[in-house]
Length: 441
Image 1 (cartoon, rainbow, N blue to C red):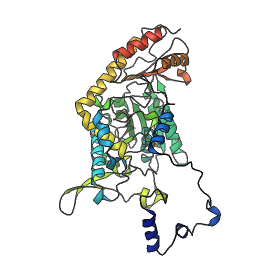
Image 2 (cartoon, helix red, strand yellow; image 1 turned 60 degrees about the vertical axis):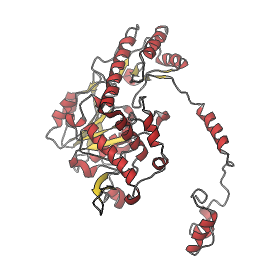
Image 3 (cartoon, rainbow, N blue to C red; image 1 turned 90 degrees about the horizontal axis):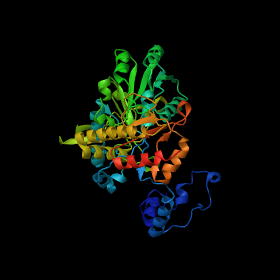
Image 4 (cartoon, rainbow, N blue to C red; image 1 turned 180 degrees about the vertical axis):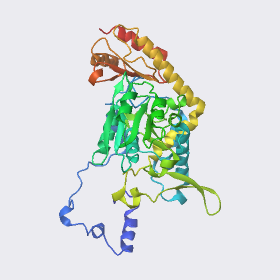
């Protein structure tokens, strides 16, 4: 780190002398010699800016970038207004870290506060944290924050994204909580199965809306079953769908979570992404990670601070219920700028276009012999179809035409594809893909 820290050798020497040392070796003298490297790092020689640029472009050229995408499964290609990148690429935002020193971090703190406010408006909840790593992590954290002394079983619907289920399972390993899977029926959460699984040890019920298959769950039925109980109702949502669907709060949920990537964050080959979390005021002190609050300074001016900081994550780690220590500030700010740029009407339009284009895509696919909707329920912007030949063959041929086709499923849906459409997919793209698929036998 000696040459990374932005100060000169002379400045480093002055600092060493100020603490009574003469060299870096003296500074690290407390480290036993047997664990020191005692050799130069095996790092190639430095390159010029032009050389680095050429090398990075060569590496990036190895990636396959598709002109047309019909795949979602948790990460979605949406239109991102140019102003989002323009604002968030400013140096003071890109280089900022956790804003502990409020007196010099008002801009970052306010951006997080605005993000939290928008997430609360989007979900109908009273309080939001400054985000976590991704949607799957948010779901796992929500399950853990639902734990009570006598309630340590989490019921998770089988229609939740399998990657989210695996993340929850990983998080619960090593805790005193257990997870049970609510069965599915016709692609939806089996309500009768859920009722039969509820007990005095149930801590929470988690469903996804829309679910992994793109179908709209009966969130009201789940909310009605859990109303008046001490069981926490967790709803994982697609944030774009909230532009037109009921909020988690309107379904009676206690905690709303989800993947915030659709809110202005590019696909980026898998990350970094953004996990949003919001809850009722009653659960405010259980939310993991950072929360920014609004206050007034000594002169009565509006100010922002990290609040509720006397928390186990910081001062009593052996009692911590979470190890989240990041605020994902840049991704959170990206979501806030996107939502501000789109506005209520813009978000609703993106949701409506995504849904209408997905239905048009489904109708066109079902014109092909052997392609049928696996489930007949209402869906948002994703759906599952059968395929008239080998699914991998279909995807390979589409790839040759610059098209990323649906997501190949396994298990009881092996051979089927999970398709997706958003507002960026055009009628021409859909019609072109259908023409290609009709020629595949």
